[in-house]
Length: 577
Image (tube, rainbow, N blue to C red; front, side):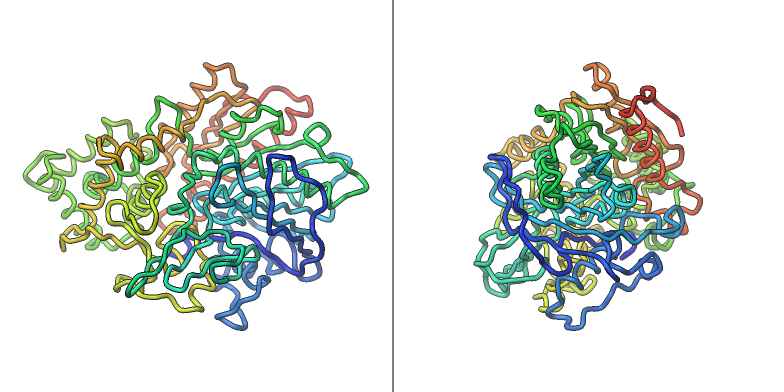
């Protein structure tokens, strides 16, 4: 589970040296700024661990478990993010040591209650003759190092600077019982310090709740993903001016700025290209992007549908690999088929007929068999419920005091009852967590789970009802979803790279409709479809996915092609790879 549902991170580093001096643009607010150096046994990509240490499932252990240093936390964060994203056992055969500096800050959009993190990584071998800045956004709900294995490993060894944003998600969890959150350097502190996130919730009796920033910030960060990326790009140019004062200014006119993102990060860079009135971006590569045009299915729509129907439909997919023991997943499947039949969602009086009905319903709503083949992956790790429960809180602008459909988050031992987290557990949330529960010991707690046979069904049905409900909560969720839809009018050349067997962000709901809409709007855009590739390269290490091609090598090839195009080569065209 640690390999599959990776942990995540968000910033920090070694010794602080000086504060950035270049003045930000008037609309940008950067606080908690600091600079760290990474040389001589430390580096930008692995913190000095190298690929061999990343291959180990055991993260570096802090000397004092309850009080890890920012250097120790950074290394754990790098370890977690590499293992959560990259194909370390296959396509990533080496990771060079890249010395340089990191520029950290909290960045705040106008009107936002909470900041997002930005991090500019500037290699010592920055190519001043070919100024290059890659701006990226973390995938999923990950912290600030969430793109370290997807694009920093591509750009830094080539002499480009890379600037990251966590786009308002991340692992700056707030513990309500202790009133404790995360500071800019990743260490924890009590309310009153400058924290990444504080929901303002006061503790109650027997308090166990943990507040997650993506779920409980009240800012609806997904609606601002594009603005987060553009603000990060401006921070990156500012950091370069501070890093090389003799070569200032660094601007979009004299520095090539390319945006790259994976999954949610891919959606973020596409939204940035649509909002880029100032011409900051020269080009964009989006890998497996979570992006929704006005007429396409939204993630919350197909995630709640899949969470309800796919467990039952698995019985009708005999060639789909299983990610649970046979008896375990069949028990889940039979229970869900019975629940769906009792609710009138499917037809049939036996499990075989019911599962065929569930599969037919999925196909009728647009799912391809290629996307359904890996349904067992999401069922085995309960990924759809984790995603839908978290996003529902964000779309509802919920606080920890107003759980949507009964879902909350707390420290648990396996399936045990919620409990208070220890100081040592809280200390590692920032470095180890992925930003979405279950992660780093923080679990999803289902307050509507009363049926002992199919405990997840009631909560999932509640989530699904938000899509067409008419009460105030449902209308808020629907309005938030509408605010995330793309215009499909990118201002810069775009290459989308997407696996045709992606079961988490299916190509039929994202890249293909975006391509069609963008083409109709006159955009310069190409789609590279990768045969047999699924969503995250880290998954290909699973025995059930042996032989599955990784996606990121194709995304890096798209970066090469985009750069060549910007240098005067031919236009980039659609490919079947």
